[in-house]
Image (cartoon, rainbow, N blue to C red; front, side, top):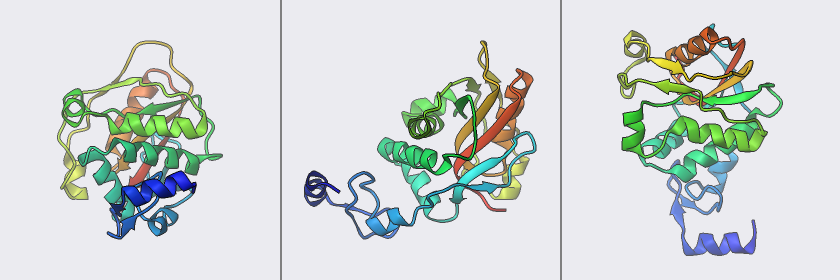
Length: 211
């Protein structure tokens, strides 16, 4: 950490979102050094839909990762979601070989209310760390939110309506989203891409919901 970073921390101390202690790490600003150090530095393979070759995440949602995802999304903390994306991309290095990174979008109305699309911001962070191009290929119609619902309730929700924009598509794609809950959203995205001829699809999320 540089002297400039230290000066910034002293001038603008924050509170760690996870443990509540002073957040003195410049690049994250919302985490203390021990909580930054505790973040997983590599992704793990997690259960995902059969339409996807492999699904990866940093770790379970019921923990620190879930705290960060919720703070980024509902606290409208764009800097945090960007930093999570960059960390996610660095943790993925060497695990997949793809032609493009494709974010799973949120519905247009939700994006308008929130001010950003967390899937797209995460995807751009992953791209910055991996050097793979981001392609925003998908559109999504509104559906019921999964927030606050149990795993059983989520599985009963109708599959979200995702479509693929016209044009030439890559052959090997990495889908990026914030959380893998039941896998139904990732499956809907993969199914739409498969119908358009994409042959090989992987998925990457910050966290996954353990059943």
